[in-house]
Image (cartoon, rainbow, N blue to C red; front, top):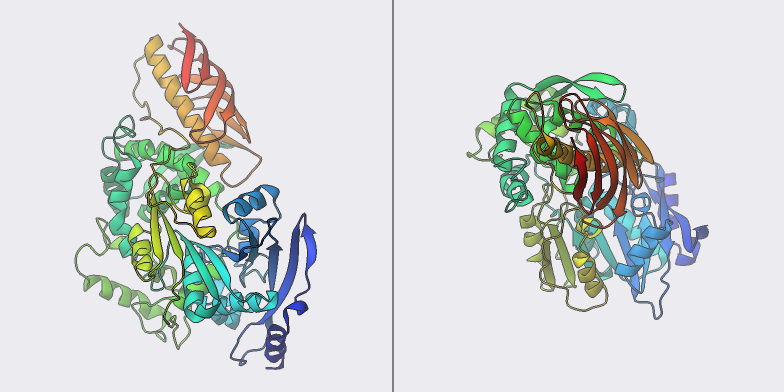
Length: 578
C-alpha cells in the first residue's frame, strides 16, 4: 500500500517534477512512475519511459501523443523519435506539434513483460504472476493521463494506430476535457475485437478481391479469394506437409489452416508477402505446396521479436479486456466446451466462408489458458468529446475492417473517414502515395482533409504463376518468360527477407541457388524457381519509392534452356538468349 501511495504522490507533483534529459539530438527523455495497482491493494510501481520531441516551428500548435498498437508495442520504441528520419516524418505531418511517445507498461523500456514461450499461454501467465491483472486497457488509459499530468499539458491531440486507436478512444471517453483532436489509423472500436473474429473473416473475401483488381493478378490466379477460402478449409482437414529449401539445406515444414490464414492476415503489412501470396496460394491449391511453405518459413524468420512487441503484454491486455463465451471464474478445463457451445448456437456465416475451426484466430482461442480475473473487465463507456476526428482505413486491411472505422466516426459530429485504396494496415506509414499524409497535415493544421484518395501504386508487382511443368527444351521466349518470373519472385523475396530490419539475409531459391539480400541490392547465385532455369547476377534498387525500380544484369544458365545475359531496366528485360 505504501509503495502505491508513493507512486500516486509522484503523479500529483507539478510538471517541473518530470525531469527531462537529452537522450538524442533534439529529443528529451524522462521517466514517470505510476502505481501497478491504482486501487492500492497491491504494492508496486511501473517506471514509464517517455520521449518528448519539441516542435521546431513557431508559433507552437500544441502537443500530440503518438500511441502504438499491438497491444504490446512500446510507443517510444515503435515511433523512434530519436531517429532523424522518423523525427523528420512526424514533424512534417504534425507541423507545430511537440511529439510525445512513451512505452506502455509492460512494453519496451517500461517493465517489458517477457514470456518463456509464445506458444505456452498458461506458462506465460504463471511467469508474470498476479501482476498480470494490472495491464488492461483501463490501466493504460490512466498511465497516459499520468504522463499528460507529469508533462504539464492541459489539452492534447492523440494519434493512435490499430489497438492504439482503442486506447486513444478509451482515453477520450475517460478524460474528454483534456482532448483537443484525434487521429485514428486502422480503427479498433472500444467493443472490439470480439471473442470470435467475425467481422474480420466476413470481410476477408471482399478485401482479397481488392488485392487483385482488374488484371493485376491475372498471371498468378484467376480467383484469389476463391483460392484462399478453398485452401484454408482444406488445410483444416489436412495440413500442408513437405520439404522446402532453406538457407542450410532442406527443411520439413507443416502449415495448417490457422497458420495459413495468419499468413494471409500478415500480407496487409508486408509488400513482399503481398506480391508473393496470390501465386503461392494458387500453386498450393493445385497441389504444389513448396512456394507457400517457403513463404511461411521466411515470414516466421522475419517476424517481430518480443523486444518489438511483448507477447506477455498482449495476452495480459486482451485476455483482461475481453468478453468471452465462459464466465470469468470458469475453470480452464471447462472453457473449450463453452466455446463449442457458443459456436454451435451461433447463426450460419458467423466466421464468413470459413468453418468453425477459424475461431482459433480470435481472442477466445488465444485466452483459453489465461487465468482471467474472477471479476472480469470491461471498459466503461462515457460520452466522447466533440473534437475534430480523422479516421484512416486501408482498403487492403484484413485486421481492422473499414466498417469499424465508419462506426467510430459516426459517433463524432466532427468526424471524417478517409479510405485509402491499395494500402493495408497502418495507413499513414504504409501509404506510398502520400495522400493520407497530406490529409493528416490538413487535420493537424485545422484545415479540411481530403475526402478520398486514388488507389496507391503497389511497391512490387504481383509475382506470376510458378512454372511447375516445363518441356525438356526451352526456346528463347520460354526461357525469357521463366527468367522474368524468377526475377519477380527474387524482388519480392528480397523485400520480405529484409522486413524485420535486418541489414542482410540469405534466402533459398525454390529449385536451387541462393539470394543474398542487402539494403539496396540483392545478389543471385544460380537462383531458380523452376527446374533448370538458373539466374546469377546483381540487381540494384534504382527507385526506392513505389513502385520500386530495379536495375542490373543476370546470366541465364541451365540444361536444355536458352543461355545468355539479360539486363533489367525499368521493369524490362533485354538481351540475347540462345
